[in-house]
Length: 192
Image (cartoon, rainbow, N blue to C red; front, top):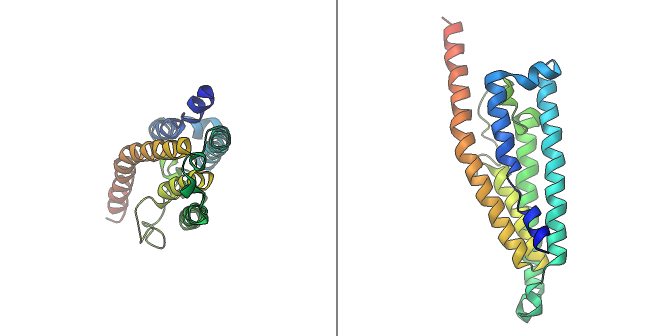
């Protein structure tokens, strides 16, 4: 049980991919290895998706193996809690899916670190409602699932995931801003 919880808590892959992406921006290792920026980004995306699926499976195993709150708090057994969990999952999915469509494949999977830059900042839904909707949507999916399962361990893991995302944002945001600042400088030099 403890081993399962420890494995599921290993949300550090997000930070590792951010580090890999920053190194890619500087040294172009994956671009050179795979022959193009797009191929390198696709490889990184496949790795991210596989580790995300592994993380999700470990999360599900924890939810299924840990005690549930309804055993000691009968009020948690109400259908309201089930609907709350379902609603959070639905909201999270909406944020994640609409973010993916707004950013596109390369925008979602760190393409800007590979030099695959977007023409302009995305301002349509859900980015016009909140910053980092994909991260918050992912958190809401996990949190909603934990609520649905009535799992205290799941709630704790959801907030650990949120903390990981907040740390990633603190590293990602200034680095991405710098990439686009450099692009703007290059564009202004070209237009002279």
